[in-house]
Image 1 (cartoon, helix red, strand yellow):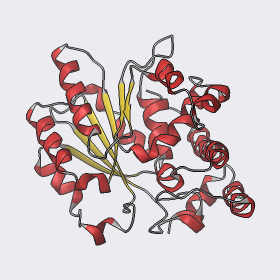
Image 2 (image 1 turned 180 degrees about the horizontal axis):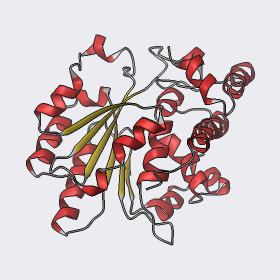
Image 3 (image 1 turned 120 degrees about the vertical axis):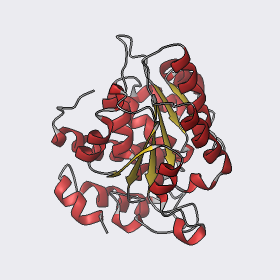
Length: 286
């Protein structure tokens, strides 16, 4: 795990993957921009730093993307890793695209994405139990959305994981406070969110989900198994991070810029931030 990464490099990656996401999905014509932008730093932290790959670029650890609406951000990150080329992405991300290309490159490892919300954490817990029984040192990382935690299946998996002491399971919750139609605390209050996980016997940490220093600090001891509990990292984020005119606004869940003027504005709003992360924080933290 690259604990000594230059954070300026990482924050430049944050900008680069957001820009690349815009390129891919404005061309496609649809996607989930705001939910993908809230998870960019989390995805980079998991896939580019925390996870281990072998010499053939096949993952040793496992990644379950339970937050399926954010699956689009996997493509620019996989490109940055050198696992997918832009040509590969173009072959997959199009109407009638060849999903077998994605399967060839990222499974096993990138075990699951998409589908009905609330499924991924159960799959991740099952993977973690199997790996533990086989005495594997692999870690299972699972990225969830916060509104996804309304699902009863999520809490069944939470109890299952703590009962089986799955300290090889790390769940990161993208806590952007928005579901598809409204703020989570208006729809069905989740707070006190961290206490609910703690009461289920999980090791819980709360971090700024757009700050690599905090994300990596939370991930640094995962492989040491310093606790017999599964770990939940609640990452506080902004839905639409990087595009202020779309940030923290209900009913922008499945939004993608369309039309020449709208697309131009989205690129210009992101590009004026460039790799200047101090300005990035200042412009979109509210």
